[in-house]
Length: 189
Image (spheres, one colour):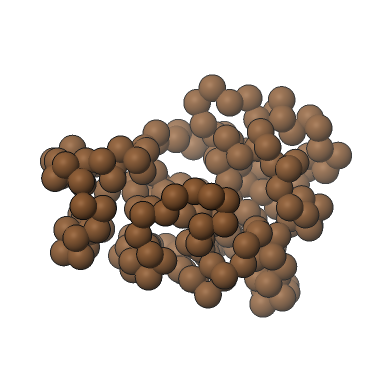
């Protein structure tokens, strides 16, 4: 089985995240996706707690992906990948990253450990992924998802519009169930 590992803050999860998972499964890149919300390990200011983010992820991915917050405790991606490989011994793991992450991927902790698996790269406008991959000896571990058209959605934009109670601007950006959950729980206000 081909299992995708999608790690991120998802603060909040939005239609861009959803479209990536749907595309990868619907187009047979992957058989299954595991979504892992992270804690704040890279000095990124998270706005809501892990429990809320996990609940929102489950609202969006109940049919297409599993949400595993127990792996959120690991600080580095390679640790998550190692733990999951211990569970999915006979399966192939594919880390899902955006093209913007390829630029500094060589700086990630234990890149060699991560590249024991595969990396699915989601294109982003204006980023020449091949240029950055030329530095890697094991380029064959990277798979660029060239048939995907990225939705440019900013979580900051979402949070600002929620804070301003401008919910109409979020209709095609945030899943209705997530938006209802955010409003019900007074998140990002």
